[in-house]
Amino acid sequence: MNNDILKTLYSKEDIQTACKRLGKEISTFYKGKTPIVIGVLKGSMFFMADLVRYADIYMELDFMDVSSYHGGLSSSGEVKLVTDITKDVSGRDILIVEDIVDTGRTLKFLMDTLKDRGAKSIEVCSLLDKPSGRVVEASSKFVGFEVPNEFVVGYGLDYDEKYRNLPYIGVLKPEIYSTK
Ligand code: IMP
Image 1 (cartoon, protein in one colour):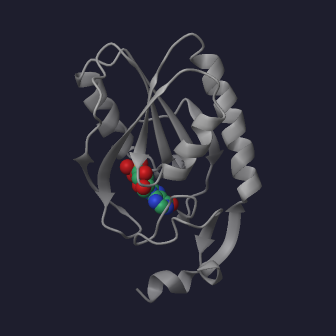
Image 2 (cartoon, rainbow, N blue to C red; image 1 turned 90 degrees about the horizontal axis):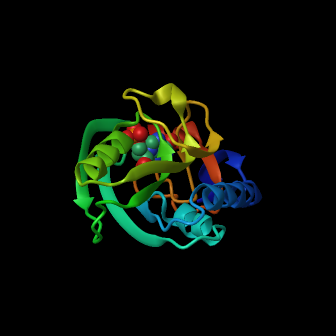
């Protein structure tokens, strides 16, 4: 699997440093509150696990699964709710944890959905942000790294459901796409 990677963008250590910083920022922001932290599956699984353990506040954890990709490089444009959260969000402070914000469609869908359900506040923590990919307006309050317009894999992020278990974030060799 490692042989398919052209270059590493963020090492294990880079990612942990970012998680630590974000965990502190979140602890300061939510001091005295108990937010519901919602991880967006499956891409945010490792980030969510690391991030919340660097936060020193009370919080409740939940997960949502949405789909907008067909296992390839580009978004289909349509976002669907695959698995819903189990908690009532009305009157609650919500922190959405995302792996990456690209077109912004997933985030907009989630924010609209949670707003409709009466959430008191909704903020976003995204490990990666790809502002050049933005199609709809959506922004994260807490961002790990701003990435260039490249397709990245690892630490939860996939290409065709693979590479999620890479412990770092990297860019695939072009031949991996072309031989698909
Ligand atoms: P958006 O709706 O276009 O903002 O895309 C959000 C979702 O698309 C993310 O949660 C990822 O699952 C996926 N995605 C976007 N860019 C990449 C990438 O570079 N690598 C892997 N997945 C990506």
